[in-house]
Each structure stands twice: as structure tokens, then as C-alpha cells.
Length: 223
Ligand SMILES: *Cc1c(COP(=O)(O)O)cnc(C)c1O
Image 1 (cartoon, rainbow, N blue to C red):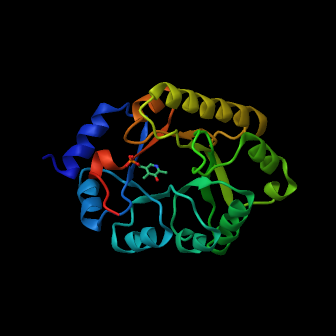
Image 2 (spheres, protein in one colour):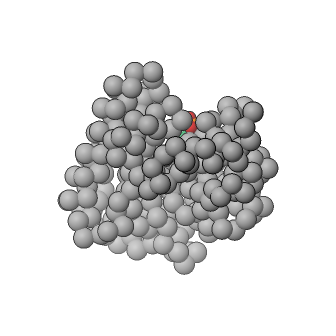
């Protein structure tokens, strides 16, 4: 069995070097994260605010922590002091809360808008119309402590990669439309976070700049 460090190393050399690898360490102990860290991995993804805050406290401070799951507004305060990217902005009210907590910390927090691209009901995310509405609003213009740097989406969890590809194409086209409508003079708006263990190859082909990989690197999760 290859170690976590070896898996990270092999995985990294199998993907283009310009793709940012978010190692999804949710539910995994500090020791696994340190193995990955020692193999050079610095970007980790978590989906529970308090779990992420605990790991931030105990692990090396040059780790970039990415929040990747649905984020409740009352949990933003736990991660606002240190989070480096929130992938999962799925409402205007969440964005407003992130802005408020970032202001308290004297920070500007980078965020991705999460879009609902899957055919499953259960997944969170904005529709294109909701995003337009939000970005056009006066309230949005007043948020000085957040920085929208791109989009994120999760495809349907299914073997049928043709459907997955269609969904990733859709996210890419939303990205292009937002870029030209709202962010044409903002060079920081450039990220497309899509692709997990089962579909990252399709995601890369369809323009992902960041992929979020958990089980392929750390093994199956036990909840
Ligand atoms: C858990 C999770 C991942 C990683 O999933 P794997 O299938 O283990 O690679 C990626 N993105 C989000 C939003 C997740 O919750």
C-alpha cells in the first residue's frame, strides 16, 4: 500500500502542473494531513467549520485552508480568522455574513460562487439568475471584505461521464458569462473549482483550475 505522501506525489505528477490540487482532508486525522504536508501538499479542504478550526490550530501555519461544503452563517465566525478560500457561497446572506466577519478580522476573504449544476436536488448552489441578481445589487457593491475569485460546482454523482461533462461545460459557460458581465477588469476572477475523485479527469478537460480530491488520496472516509 502506498503511503498518503506517495499517493499525493504520484497524483500530482499525473495532473497538469497549473491545476491547483485541494486535498480534501475532512474526517481525516492530523497525522494524515501531516503525511501529505511532508510530501509538499499545502492546500487542504474541509467541510465542517469547527473541525477545520481545530486542524488550523494544531497544524503548520503555512497550510492554506479551503472551505468546501455548505456553510451555515452562524459558523462563519470559526473560520473567518484564517480561511484562505471559501468555495461554497450559495446565497447573498452568506456572502454578507462572510463580509462582516472578514471586516471584524481586518481581512479580505476570497470566495467562489457555488452553482447548482447537478441534476440531484440535494446539492446546494446558486442558479445563474440568482447570481446575476446578487452581483447586480447595490448591497453587493458595498461588500469590501470579500473577493469573488471564481465559481465552483459539483456534478451529479453518477457513472455516466457524458452527463458529468455536460454539467462541467455548463459551469464553464457560467464562468465565462460572469467574467464578461461583472469581472472583465478583475484579473483575480479566474478560478473554476470542479472535479472530485471520480470525475476530476473530465473536469480538467472541461477547464477546471482547481480540483478537490479526497478519497483517492486519503482512502475512503468512515463517518
Ligand atoms: C468530500 C468532497 C470532495 C471530495 O470528494 P472525494 O470523492 O472523496 O474526492 C470534494 N468536494 C466537496 C464539496 C466535498 O464535500
